[in-house]
Length: 106
Image (cartoon, rainbow, N blue to C red; front, top):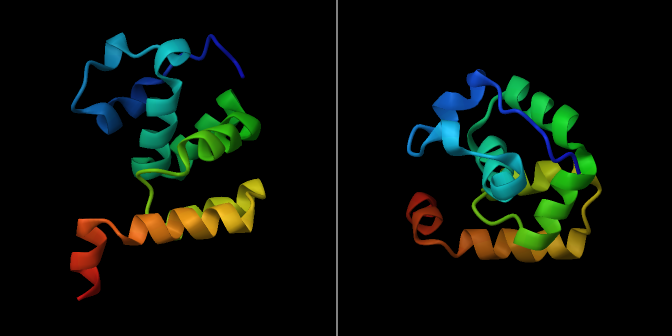
């Protein structure tokens, strides 16, 4: 995984709730990956994949169990990154247990 990734200013709106200038890839990469995967557009995700690499993103999924992403995004990344189906099935089930997701299903 690259350690000297500079965050482009185009990502600033994704991090509206924190000090963008204080974010450092080597310290905050898990947070940055999750935020870009969750809220970023195609260009943001393409930049993330180019800078960090798919292996770093795949490792994030395996370590963090896809926490914070909705089931549709988990299934998408399962296919793109060749994530283990059994693991993703569990993550999707966990995501569906959240209060917010339950409210949307009614």
